[in-house]
Length: 300
Image 1 (tube, rainbow, N blue to C red):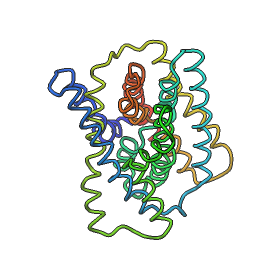
Image 2 (image 1 turned 90 degrees about the vertical axis):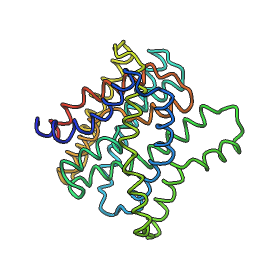
Image 3 (image 1 turned 180 degrees about the vertical axis):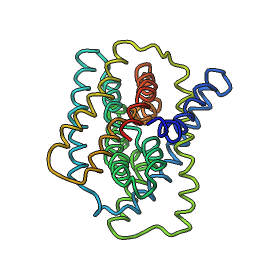
Image 4 (image 1 turned 60 degrees about the horizontal axis):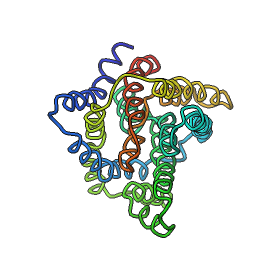
């Protein structure tokens, strides 16, 4: 456990700590980090997502494991949304993204790199399958719904045109379409994507650390409740749903490992993009990232 924590988990986590420290030292400004975050979100993440989705073999997926994971996500999301709206009295958009933070794990930029270091590129295929699920279906759902909710006064036509130009959604659509048609990206294109995509995770985590450094780390009741839902309720819900049916034990273990990960940075990125308050979302990401270190090391 300690060896995995030191050799595989902390090196990935350290880039966010570095950003946090540089933000607190005023070496990197929030404006600079916001720009870096936008570039990573709009340019580098599509380069990471497309080859992943284009090249994965969907026939090797244990679909029941992914659907059971999705069912747990849906249950916990609805529960958190209700709690945020009716108990914590959040605005709808803040409640929406807080609920997203409890079910959208930082799998693409955090769990996937860590599991690749531990198990190798071939040994962590269940995590790869969940990354494909979350970075396509789940992420696309939240991008589209958050955009529509934040721009309710705009016409359907304008909203559709804006979403059609979103680089992340374009990468998801092209990745799924080319995969289903059996069209694999050429080697030079994959090299270009690999070169750009490799910077997505460290830049996003670094920028996130800088931006989060401007927020208070003192947990209040809202931060504590949402963090507990993410770190405890989601893994328990996933564990219960996985009791349905049978599949290789490695799938159950890695799906549970993914569920125990910290809140995804994308909830914060969307909040920043649409100017939704982040004073609860930001600390939730910090605390779940810190507190999940030992649970991930134990489960791995």
